[in-house]
Structure formats: C-alpha cells, structure tokens
Length: 253
Image (cartoon, rainbow, N blue to C red; front, side, top):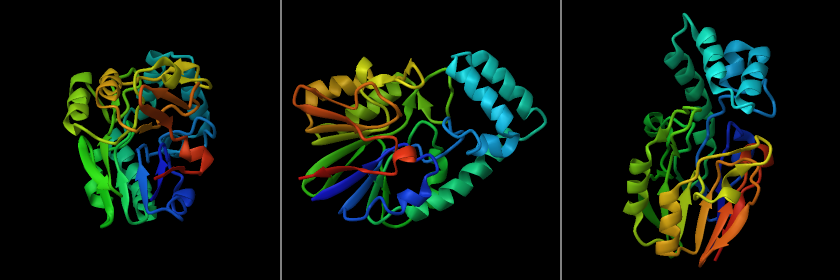
C-alpha cells in the first residue's frame, strides 16, 4: 500500500494534480488557501486586492511580530470594502481549482487558513473530508483532526484548546494520526525562516504518548527546525511545505 501525503498546498494546484500519481490514495492535511505568499508577495488574495507594496509591508510587520500594527494596516486597507465577501470570492476561486485537482480517493482535513463551511460545495465524490474522525485505509486506521489553535494571527479556522482536545480524544485508538498542526514539541514547532514558534497541540502530544500510533503526520510549520523525530513508539513527521516543494511525502506498508 502506498499513500502520498501533502500539507500547506497554498494555491499550488499545478503540482497537486500530480500528487497522487503512483499512489493508492492521497491525504491532504489542509491549508489549501493562499492569502499571502511570504516568499513571493505578488501571489495570493491579499496582493490581488491591495497590491505588492502593501503585501511587502504586511509581511514585514508580521515577521517582526508587530501584529497590532499589521492589524491596523489591514483595517485601513479594508475600510469601505466588504471584507468577508472579497475574501470569500478569492477563496472560492482557489477552491474550485484545487478540489478539482484532487485524485480519487483523497482524504482531507482543514488547515488553519481554510474555510470549512465552503468545503461541502467543492468536495467531489472520491474526496472524503474528516475532522475528529477515523477511516480505514489499507488495513490501517487513520485519525484526522483539522484546524489550528488560537494565535495573534487570527487566521480563519483557529479553535480553542478545549475544542481541539475533544476532537483528538474522539479519535480513540488509531495507527496513524493526521493533523494540520504539530504536537507541542519545541523542535517541531519552530520555523527557522519566520524565526518564531508556531502553536502545537499539547492534547495531540498527550495522545501520542497514550495511544502510541505508528505515525503522527502534520504540516503547518513551513521551515521546521526538525522535520522528523520519534516520540516513544511514534514516528512524528512534518510532511513538508507542498506549496514550495510540489512533492508529496510517501507512506508505504
């Protein structure tokens, strides 16, 4: 059995179309949407609306962790515009392309920048969306938990720690845990380019110790200090920043 796993697609539909080649299934760990490309400030919903110069400034402020100033800049730019409608229109354009690129079968969960309410409109037959749920693939039980935890970034699908922990607990005994964010381990949460710790889940780390799955797969941290480590019996793997690599991570058994 061969499964390809991607995360942090961020608008890379061209490579997503090829991501399932040679695999029995594709797993997507979320963040389909590209709001702003930190490597190329001309790409994404934000520069489409407000131009590259404003995108440059927003990235500068966020990278410096000057989140209040970043919010003030955003508020000025959005003044007089219907923010929700403009963002949703951009997300819909991206979802139409990206969901069409998913092969059959695909198993997917949400990232922190996704809009779960829109997924039922775009998920085609052959794409199974899971969040706090399990599925059997090739004799192994895979559990999926989507979304991220609350941060100053205030991305669209951030939830409180208790809600996230309840979704992790609902999985029960699984062979593979698939999440968007990592367990709360500093080496797995630190982004070496952004120079900050992303939020990992303490509940997920507890589940790894208690359930001892074969694998814990995740993304979210684009340039992690450590991409892979063993926690007890579990191999924890950041499957990579698909938006830049265009290459899925492979699991075979």
